[in-house]
Amino acid sequence: MQRVRQKNLTDVFPNPTENWLAIQNSRKNTLASVCLKNNLNKPSSKLDSRVANQLFVEHKHKFIYCEVPKVGCSNWKRTIFLLQSDFNAEASDIGHDNIHHTSLIKRLVSYPPALQKEFLSNYTKVMFTRHPLERLVSAYRDKLLHSEPFYSTTVANEIRAMFRKNKNSSEKVSFQEFVSFITAKPPHTLDIHWKPMFLLCDPCNIHYDVVDSQDPRKSDIETSQVLGARSQLPSASIWGHLVAKGARQGRLARREQSALLERETDGNPI
Image 1 (spheres, one colour):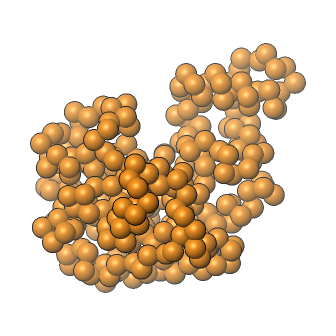
Image 2 (cartoon, helix red, strand yellow):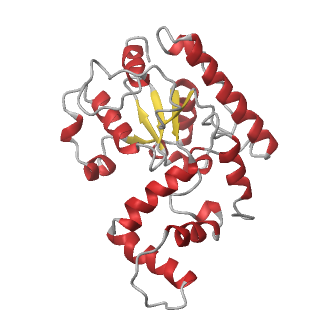
Image 3 (cartoon, rainbow, N blue to C red):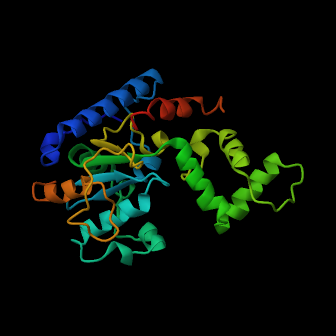
């Protein structure tokens, strides 16, 4: 797809600090370099529907959020819901399952191509990242170690069949088996909870205006609670900026490429 020019962040967010702007520029420069080095730019093609399915649109404040599972996506989707409802609810009142199945939060894929292009051109696009290994550990704990039904049966049985002599073993899948399972498959076929972040959000072909990290040690957006510490909202003040802006329209041959991208960008979370 044709890449859309990024916005001037000083026009999008009120009073951004020089440090934050510098970090954002550094991340985008790193990202551009890695995308070019790995030949991941697509000069002209239609937006992949799988990517469009990861993008959530909030019209009141004109922003688009890319959902990356295991990177705090439940909280970010709660925030979108609250923004759309003008905070006529508490984040704590929105259940985990409900927030992932509500029809009130629209995905970009639900709009025709012309509108998708328009929104990508005019809305502020945000993406959050996490260290790839930490994300895998989180997925393993949540989906396999804690025995979520589908993953602890269907997926776990597939993993056992691939790596155990005793196919009938009921012992929990180990983290080593989990990683071996992931690295044995082509990256684009992986479950979204451990599919590489760059395949989910396609940052080589979508200009994200803001790229931040879930890791509080690396997250350098000025942190404060949205609208005066509303209950259980993400602390990154980007959401406060977006609300304010509303008044102004506002191992591994097969995975070598994805591992390289995420490894090279880890120091400056893409």
